[in-house]
Image (cartoon, rainbow, N blue to C red; front, side, top):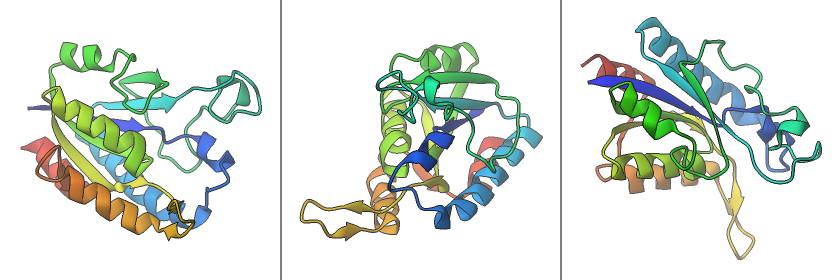
Length: 186
């Protein structure tokens, strides 16, 4: 089964957000880079997705005009098989990614990137609904604490655990970097 790594929104835009905290970035980058390097070494195509939306102004970190639509610092260098920009949560909405995957005979996706519960999870659900087999590499995703409606903090670890719980055995296989790479080889 032909496999492809989908690298979602691993971009500098997030450093500009007030919720960005650098503490978890090194751990994420270590796992994300191991996944990228493993895919490249195995000849698995890596597709880069950038999120671009909002006003086209320099002060909008998700606008091209900001200069932040570029790989997040510390990300492994690689030549993407394709690059797509999206303006919705799912990388499969209005980007042409679905066409590219079909044209290249891709049947299994490895999903990774930023943010765990938003664009990575949404793309996973969408891909599963469209018939792709999805390996969701939770440890190669990143998110940050959020606030409940009452103002209490929802820790990033709880968000990640919730994402794993709602995706597993329904939309994706939750896996480690090693498991994703082994699954691609099978």
